[in-house]
Amino acid sequence: MTVPPDFVDASSNLERFLLDARESLGHATTHQAWYSVLGVFVTFRARLSVAQAVTFSQALPPILGAMFLYEWDPAQPPQPFGPRAGLASEAQSFRREHSFLPGSAIEDVAAALWRNVDRRAFERMLGTLPTEAREFWALPAEA
Image (cartoon, rainbow, N blue to C red; front, side, top):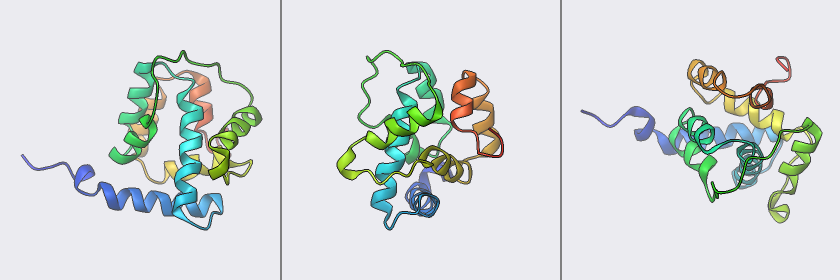
């Protein structure tokens, strides 16, 4: 059996995603994009159960899935979803010294993510999550 292509191509897939996210966010570097995406991931992850977070991570390309789970304390109880503006503000406050997130950060990261995942698998996975979780990743035209 061969190594799955997703793992063989993991580094180039991450680089492609970060370049895409950098463009969507209007950032100058992929380092800025990394922290911006991480801030959005952490904000979303805080609202999921352990099982939901693992399910979400498995629908992402391998390194993005690992990034989603990075430095997570799964003992923390899930927080409720709130208004989009509050979620965006929370994402912007993540590691403030590294944050370059615009107010449109969630939408910008969602757009880049949708362009870099298996859309059918991602849609199926989102269908298993609560409505608020699906709305978090909705593209502006779909929201």
